[in-house]
Image (cartoon, helix red, strand yellow):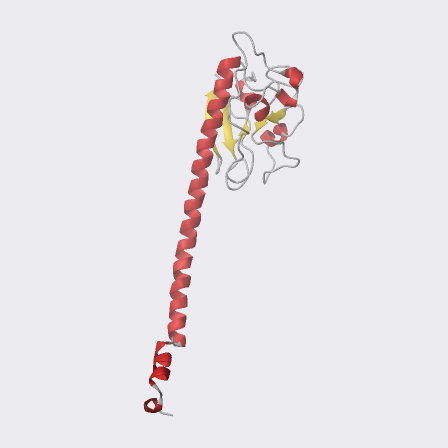
Length: 217
């Protein structure tokens, strides 16, 4: 049947369709644009996560230093009420049952240890070092707990892991080690690359994100 024999409606229906070549071209363009857009979007999202982590490290750092200004000690008190005893502090509402990071590190080992680790919340949000009421910081006198120092539970980082404070570096007396006090996120790879010894020349390494709170001489 020739085109001349087709009804006007049939001719319009045929003319309005796409050929196979046209469909392939359109799909190719869509896939090309998607291939460009997705990595760009992922990059923007990752930049946003890093910016959030940097900001939250600063907020947590400011809270720790306000605590220090008020109490005269770093948030490192034990369940027995002994100051300068805890080595590593984790952010978050609860202590993780298993290592939430993608590799081991002394900051993690200390933080998850019942003796040398604790939650930031137990010092900044409530006055219960290692979750013990009897070990509370003084609430009277010149140097006293004036918290809470944070508005609600301290956050996890944008990748769902705790921020870590190597509070040992605030008080430990060593000739070379534990000089720099940090608030740190392990970053996107979930692995701490910064040297746990935190000497006077130790800087953040790898994709770690953090803020330096102070340095001992």
